[in-house]
Amino acid sequence: MIRYRSFSLSVAALCLTLGLWSCAGSSGGKAGARGPQAPPAHDPLNPTLAMVAGSPITRHDVDSVLATAPPSIREDYLADPEQYKMLVDRIVQQQIIYLAAKSAGVESDSAYRMDLANQQRQLIMKHYYAKVVSSLPALPDSAVRQYYESHPSEFAMPGRARVRHIQVATRAKALEVRKRLLTMSWETVCALSSTDKVTAKSGGVLGYVVSDGDQVPGVGKAPAIVAAAFRLKEGEASEPLKGPKGWHIIRADEKTEAGPQPYANVERQIRGKMESERSERFQQDLLESLKKKYGVVVYTDSIQNAMEPILTPAQLFAQAQTASLGRDRIDLFRKVVERFPNDKSAVQASFMIGFTYAEELKDYPAARAAFEDFLRRYPKSDLVASANWMLQNMEHGVPPPQVGESDTLLIEGLPVQPPGPGTPTKP
Image 1 (cartoon, helix red, strand yellow):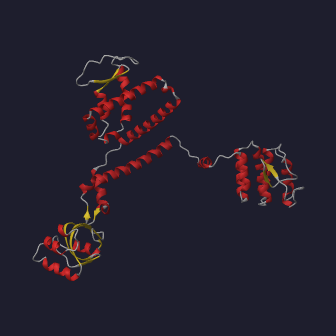
Image 2 (cartoon, helix red, strand yellow):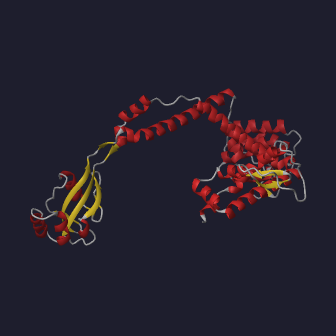
Image 3 (cartoon, rainbow, N blue to C red):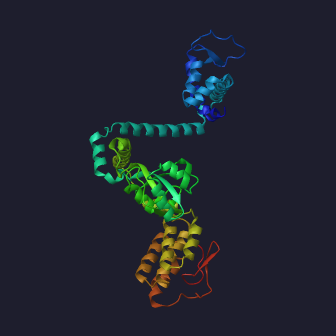
C-alpha cells in the first residue's frame, strides 16, 4: 500500500533517537563500540531489533514511533515485515546521525545554539500561555443556554421538504394527471405520464427545497413550486404549477417546518464559539496587563524612520534639493542636520534651511532663527560669511553680490542655488 509512506516518520524517529542514547547509557553499552557483537539475550516481550554504539533499539522504541501515526498507517506497518524493517533502519539512521553530530561538536555551534534558544523561547511562551489559560473556569451551562435563548436568529432553520413531481407539457395535461391520481397510485401515473425521463421511473423524486429559497433540484428557479410544497399536506397532490420546463403536479413529504434548531444540536457549537471569544478577550487583556507591568513604550516616530530607506547624508541632501515645495525641502534639510550633524552635507543643509525661508518663503523671522542656529552649530564653516550677509541684507531685497542665475553650489556634484556672495566652497 502507498498511503503509509506519507507518515512523517523522520521527525518522529528523530525525537525518539534523541532519547534513546540516554536510556541506552544506563544499560551498560559502551558508546563508540565497533565490530560485530553478540546479540543480547532474547526478551520475548521486548526484543532488541538493532544495536547502535552498544545501545539497543527495541520493539518498545519502534512502538513509540508508531504510536504517533494514524491507526490505519500503524496497522499497515505492523502487517508488512518489509516496511517494519524499513522503519527500524530509519531509526538507526537517525541515531547514528545524532551521534555523529554530537561527536562533531554541533552542540557548540553558534547557529545550533541560536536555533535551540529560539525553540526554547517559543516553548516557554507556549507553556506560559497554556498555563494561564488553564486557570480560566469552565463556562457554566447556564451561560451557554442563555446565549442560545438570546440569539434565536443564529439558530433558526428554514423549512425543508422533499418534492416529487410529474412534469407535462401543458396545463390541460396537468389537469388530466390530477384526475388519474384519484384512481391510480402516484408512482404509476408518474411512470406513464411524466416527460421528465430522469425521474419518471423513481416516483418523480427531485430532492429537497427550503422555505427561504426558490430553487428546485432538477427544475431550476421555481418559487411557485417551493411555495406550494409548504402549503400542501404531506402526500397531497398540488394544482397545476408552471415551471421553467413545463407544467408540474407536485407532492411534498418529509416536511420540516421553519424554526430554531434544538438546543442539544447546537450546544457544542455555542460553547466553542463562546470559549473562542473569551480566549481572545483574555489574551488581549493579558497582553495589556503585561505591557503595563513591563513598561512597554512604542516610539511611532522611530517606526516611521525605520520604514524609510537607508540613505547616506549626500543622498538625503539630494532628495531635499528635488522636493518641489519649500517647506518639504526644509523638513528634509532638517533631517540631514538631525541625523548626520557632523557630516559636511549637514553644514550645507543647515545653511539651506535659512536660505529657503528667506529667499523662497519670505519668512524672515524663521530665516533669522535658522541662520543663527547655523552660526552656533558651524562657526568655522566657509559659509559663515554668507550667513552673516543674509542676516544683514535678506529683508532689504538686495541680491547677494556676484550671485546670478547661473551660479551654483556644488555638493557631491549636485548643484543648488548659492546662498551667499560668490560661490561658496565646501565646509
